Image (cartoon, rainbow over all chains, first blue to last red; front, side, top):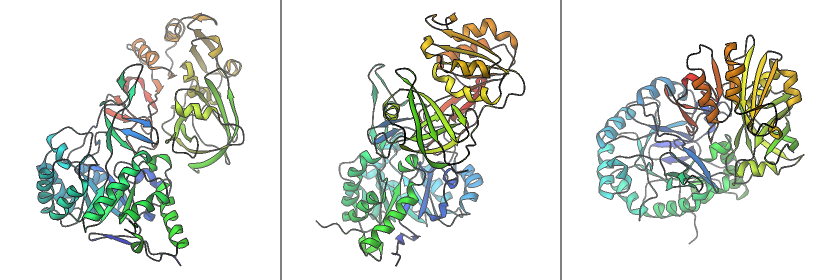
Amino acid sequence: MKPLLEVKIGELTLKNPVLTASGTFGYGLEYSQFFDISKLGGIVVKGLSLRPKEGNPPPRIYETPCGMINSIGLQNIGFDAFVKEKLPFLKKFDTKIIANFFGENLEEYEELAQKLDATDGIHALEMNVSCPNKTSEWRMMGLQPELLREAVRKVRSKVKKTLIIKLSPQVMDIAYMAKICEEEGADAISLINTIPAMVIDVKTKKSLIGTLTGGLSGPAIRPIAVRMVWEVAKAVKIPVIGIGGIVNGRDALEFFIAGAKAVAVGTANFINPLSSIEIIEEIEKFLIEEKIENINDFIGSLIE
Amino acid sequence: MNKIFKAEILKNQALTEDVYCLSINVPFNIDAKPGQFFIIKINERLDPLLGRPFSVFDIEDRILKFLYRLKGKGTSVLSKLREGQNLQITGPFGKWYPFPKNDYIVIAGGIGIASVFYLMKKFPKRAYLFYGARHRREIFFYKELKEFAKEVFISTECGTFDYKGVITELFRQKGLHLNLPIYSCGPMIMIRELKKLLKNKDVPCYVATEERMACGIGACLGCVIETKEGFKRVCTEGPVFEIGDLNL
């Protein structure tokens, strides 16, 4: 018998617990040439801002052992173009569309959140408070508890849809940050965003990333992400979405045991465009082998 | 056409100490155009993590060939793979060279020949080829090029083969006046020089660019270069650009 893979994140029901992480799956179109993206639990689209963003000067990426550093700088086409040019295509698929978003200041966060909330075809919002490649005072939003509290409170007041807060790993106590989000009414927490990192060319003595530093992702950061998901899942009652270096079903299962209700696949999409659906198949196969009928019985099953 | 496939290595031959020619056997007829690229996942391990992009060097029925220079970890691991091993390939991707309608000029610097060889093979006997390398050892497939091109001009930096100097200078002397469309691939220094030479010329010049890539399909926005109209993705809007559009 096929195991039940359905999970709930706030008001959102996912047919399976595998999402594609923001910034790694474009607007879905890029991957629809390889597989039926309706098979996904959901798609978290490339981070959106009110107005289009050019992004950071190249070079933007560099591969490191079992990982990569990126500094894209949140390049995106902006809300209006997204709704006009990308959303109609995404609406054709039977999967949940989660809009990742950010602003240059809190007012922009609120305004964009309100617009996204009112837009048909967007099922949930993921608020990015943690991009390592941005420079503004609100870059610190995800790092300073009181800024985070104010931001989540204000955005929550504008959003009726499921609101997910994506946290930075760059904090002393991530469970504390997650609790703040929960107290201010967030429906779910996703973590982790990339880890600030650097790589230097020893001959030129220059950074190999245009903006000098970038965010590290990929399997290299997975154990850190698993630990943080475990800490957060213990501390809050709202669902946790685990992100960080998942490249196969076994990796995803670690996050479920640690307490994640869903996972998002990121860098793996770059390695193999089929990663996300292969991961769904591998999770299913494991549950069948282990005779687990419902993934929800497996979530948070860590034996301490 | 299947954009993700496994292909067996037929040959992975060292041409010099750091340039290799990889031939793979594709399980179907390959429809790729000159200037496009494929992404090769070098092994199933996590290091190297990402696939590496290589432009189409040559296609013979179901055999796909790449010419590559050892640059880093990826190409180093790739160079050690042997016949019979399987690679995961995705592609072809990217904008190809607009097909030449009449005679045309090709300017290749070093390993840049990899990107234009198949163009001359598909549109034979019409190209004035200007091909520069450091040393005569690094003039690859001379016999074939002689056959595909209408005329071949070679330069080497050390003067071990024909003209001594850089290829843009030889082109200035022997090719600039022809006023034909130009197809070009080579190091940035060569492209910059070419742009200078063409400043007052009204001929199209197509350049195949390169940049580090992650996804290769336009999703990650990692491979952008600066153009007149802002950042453009090498994998999707490129790799072939009109030289005038590039901020070099």
